Length: 346
Image (cartoon, rainbow, N blue to C red; front, side):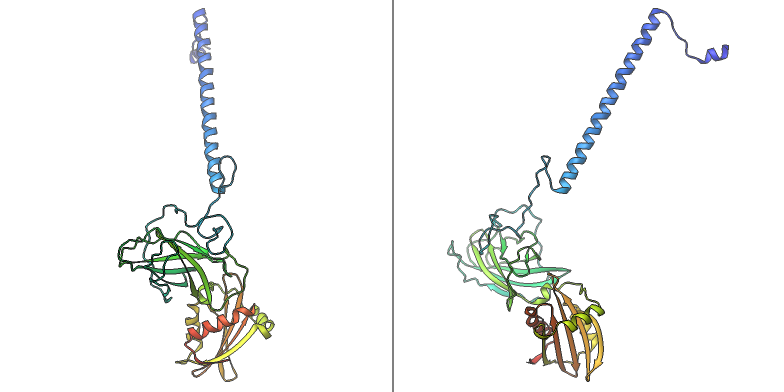
């Protein structure tokens, strides 16, 4: 009993001792209350931060109102016959320094001559070369800006694209370094499909209507492009689906032409060459004295085109079948150009 008693803390039963115990208990309660309040405030702060993070992820502000993000690709003002009240030529948000456009297989052609006079300033001197192609899974516009004026640097470039059948719109701001007199600057602009749909059928040739603004004036022009620039990297058609579509797409959804190549194409060479244009191998066979190779392509709007290439020496016979007839001449032109065909016959 004495050992057990010795293990307990002594208790002072005097009035002074009882007062000390009471004060200690009160102080302990106050500390616990302060700790509990501090933990509650910390939890509330963490919760607020989490809510704000989730709001940012959803694109909402703290009042629950959706934040509207704009780009040069949609909701544009009516510079080219478009509806809407968004000005794509307003001061853009700061962007990283532009880099030179990579030189790729597309041939840049003049779309704006230096002698073109701006409607407002009555000044010219800006020459633009452009081309549209497919690079790394993306449709892009390659551009070169030349300043052929003698007295001023050109800067503050911005772009607007009119509505078009594929809905191609700028992926972001046009980044062009200031161009001194006699100088040039290259730029690459990504294009996103399905944003500026015109609802109109394809034209032949394919083209985009473009407006370019810099610090002096606005200029308007068109940029032509080939079908390959809007063919995706995945054909989306296996052999069974190909066979079914091939049998179904007859009549007005089929076109045949032939030509002479400057070389002899075989299946392996055709497969490797057309793959660079996203015209993808499906099957091959020997028939009617020809080596026949079959390909498929899927456009950025998910339409499908099928191709048969029959080779006998340098003679090439091509059959094209498409989901919609308007695609036929475009694929014919692409195949003839890619295979270097001449003496074309329908």
